[in-house]
Image (cartoon, rainbow, N blue to C red; front, side, top):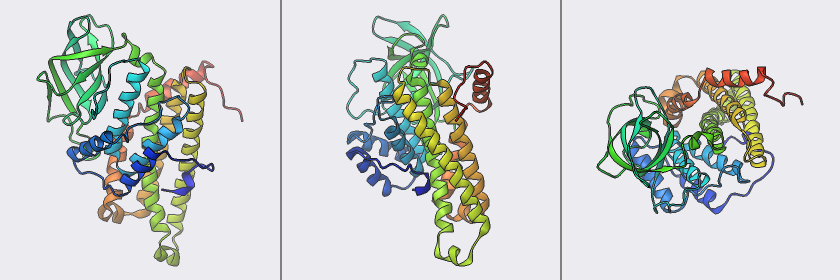
Length: 357
């Protein structure tokens, strides 16, 4: 890990964190979704998915775990983050059902105009789902999912809990042509009279405070990917051959990367502290700032490391090449200009404070 980006204070890792780190140290990024899913399943079986609940006093510890996984494998981080987010959502919304032992979960909440899942029938405790859901990471391998669905009259969204191992659920082979993040297996899923259970009331998924806590947690994954690229640059710059020959261009790039990482790490730490201190407050602007900051950091690190290292790292360093392909795709989960507009509107209306030192 790039030590310049770590906080000054020391922290004690839990046994779960230590064990996860040990497994990551010997893990190579998976080339396909089956291997990523196998890793997630193995971790779940031994309890390595047990992270602190967001806003429960240890949010930074949670984000450190997400960042650490992401720095090794962004596709694994995508599935891992979605799984632990699902567990956090179920707890926050008061779902009392026991999570099946060894189950692996996704959270599928994308709502493109051509893909919507409708509640086609409703009974006191069960609903029937029909329609298509897009951008379903890990769909071919997960056991369960939480997904946003809509009533036939257009009301919603509701959050539905569904077992993926039933006849009414079919996974498409279409929907993902990207090289980056290919191992997430993010495809379309079709529901045909699939049985599910609703979690919470209409709008509960979006209205809960944890929606923005989870959104900010994604930024920790982006940060972890940037950190891995920065480490690749530092390894090259600090090698004996590089120190003997000197390279001002690479040192300058590393200096700019160091600044981007320090700024983003400070923002993440401050955001985690604020969330823990204000667990029920509106964290939307905070989360959007963190996401924009982490995205800018990732873009800066991608740019600086690519220019400084040249073609050799893209072509001969498998770890760098995969991370450089995955990270641009992952950060496109950002809202981009829409997020900046939302924060700018709040700032213009006087709804944003905290600019002063």
